[in-house]
Image (cartoon, rainbow, N blue to C red; front, side, top):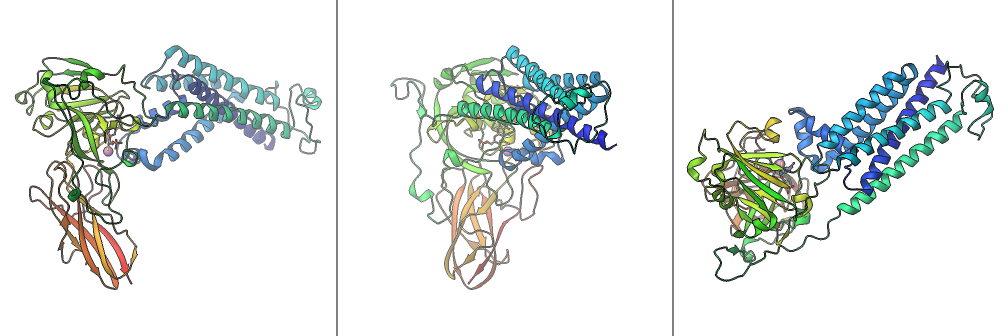
Length: 548
Ligand SMILES: Nc1nc2c(c(=O)[nH]1)N[C@H]1C(S)=C(S)[C@@H](COP(=O)(O)O)O[C@H]1N2
Ligand SMILES: [Mo]
């Protein structure tokens, strides 16, 4: 029994080491040649995509934040476990184990083929080669552990045997295999595992180095400033000073690109070349279009200040940022495609505008929202520079007033007009079909559990109700019993957040600070608390402080 247990452990180790080598080599090939996707990332990505809605949706929606380490760890543990179990299985049925390996290979191929861009021959070769190496290594370890001899010999006195450094120990030969002592088995497996990890590490380093984007370049529009053209390129003046309130902790009015919140389902951002990028505008349009990057830049462009927010943002959370976007009006492109407002009403075949990404991700919203005068953009610039890769380079959608999950497709490659039946990525995963951004406000200058000095304390932050604008912000210092009018910075745009501050004369005591905003239509945000799922969090941001 004991000997059998030990065989199993060794077989498991052999299989796991084989998996490390297989993934290590695949990762190294990926590092050396971008045409082969990271098989590990591809499989993890497929796991994300296949995870159904409900419980998992929040975890996935916020993958951009903290859950990647969790996912990677479970993927590694899962892969090693499967490989280890297959090696144990191979002790009884080599055919069974081999079938298992083939199944793994097929899964890897399918996963890799869902990656945006790859070289199929090299990818298959890498998967087959990696698996072959992994199997060979596991097989070698199984043999050197004496687990491939005709019958499993008991392991006599091995513990007492003096440790020996020669791999092909005589003692092992005597029993018909090439069994090595425990220490040598550990050395061999450890060495192979280290080699696999080194290959993986080298591959990662190479691919990360390749993915590093030079600092985003300034947006350059050929022909900007040319006289006598029907095409216009509208830029914005710097925000006026009165659009910002100066208080410690207040977020900048326009979020620097490097601080812009990041949410997507991509484990690694797709790399799309602007020179080969194409946008298809199709579906229920009269005049299907194919636009290159330079086609897009030869249309009228504009800058627009638009606050983007994630539906997963908790009350008081940071999944919201304000950008100065450069792009082409979605309505101009739809016009070129032969769409007019009369074509997109309820029940029409063009009722929904679906944005598709190179990675297959989709968003969808009422087409009429792109035609009602709001500055919905096909955007290629953020804060004067080209889009950062992780924010959708070269081109994405930005629609004022809608949460990102229904509208803000990054790495945009296709716009399809279709009827309302189609459900986009997060809708299939149980989030609301329509995603208007809810009126919300946040206290930034004071943090929960702060201990403050008595005296003047500015309670300030941001309030937002994009496309409706903010007309009023009130602050309570007594948990919502009474409310004080906050002063408002000038509204940069109805599509952006608005800064506010209330100058509080704080006296010693314990306080519950709250904020509430009223939008441009006169509706005050609801006090009713709701979680982000399925249509966005509500309730008042509450901060408890002690004043001494
Ligand atoms: N291709 C792609 N586009 C996407 C997503 C995604 O997962 N894939 N996530 C969306 C969501 S949920 C949000 S909130 C915004 C976030 O944009 P940002 O990362 O630039 O802030 O992008 C949207 N666009
Ligand atoms: Mo989102």
